[in-house]
Length: 79
Image (cartoon, rainbow, N blue to C red; front, side, top):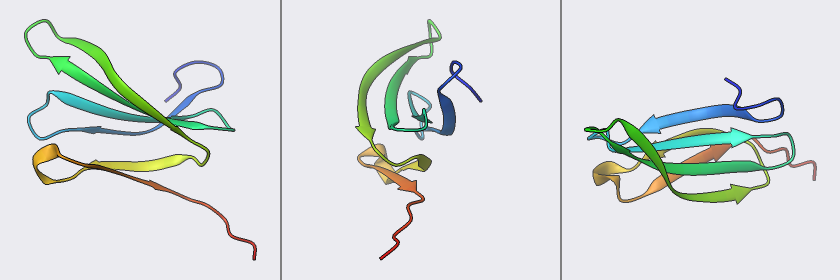
């Protein structure tokens, strides 16, 4: 899925109770992990925080009890 002409959504993951959403995006040069909170009553997503990295985020997961987040990417090491 695309957010706009240059940004692609690579991974999404809801937490266990459906109140937080992780979204991993990339634009060809950098990737961003956005964390959203979701209000089930109003059905509104609110950006809670984000982090940027240089390699594409291919997978994201919540750890048990939603205390930690893990990301996975594909990098090439040509050494």
